[in-house]
Image (cartoon, rainbow, N blue to C red):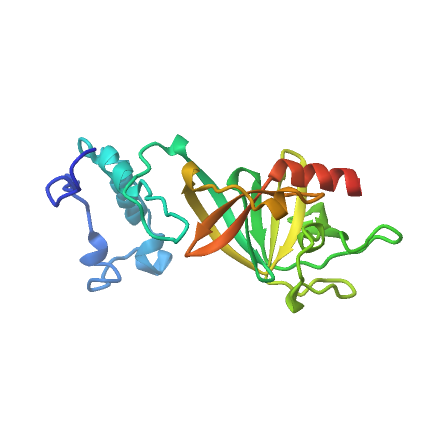
Length: 244
């Protein structure tokens, strides 16, 4: 493993910039004649060109490798304390989206996540909508099927995810799926994307793994609390066969 980053290793040859915004621009004496047109230096082509030069400059030797080592995560054990084994290769880790439903914390692979949106109106379908299949949702002009993970996973619903006439009072909606197979799930919380070492994935309890519909692929721990890592393939397979 390389040595920790130092002020010397982080030093980057900074290009000489025409920082006219500090002289005659909004942070200077405002004598620049372009301000009458662009109003602010941030909208000026000179400012944009300076930013491009900073982003396009070559990194110093070993800079990328040193940051890879810094960003390599340290796995946590069952008690949520850090271990001494560092994740060196990304292939040894999994990226998941953590979210909450009721009192449960759940996770799905990032690869199946399409987007997270604000609550949308759910249009029920006559003689089709039920506790599992809630109806249709319009996401950026695309009509998608909306399902209740609370019902599918047999979780206790919170008040925020109770079904109303045309909508669900929820904080977020997750769009997940693979390819053209997309589903919308109302959720209470979205905590973000996190990475875990494969060695942190624990077997699901026997009471879960022997259930008729076991969607928990394993257990991981985040901030000292249990998270059910869901089997996405089984999840979408069941939805397709129960609803479509």
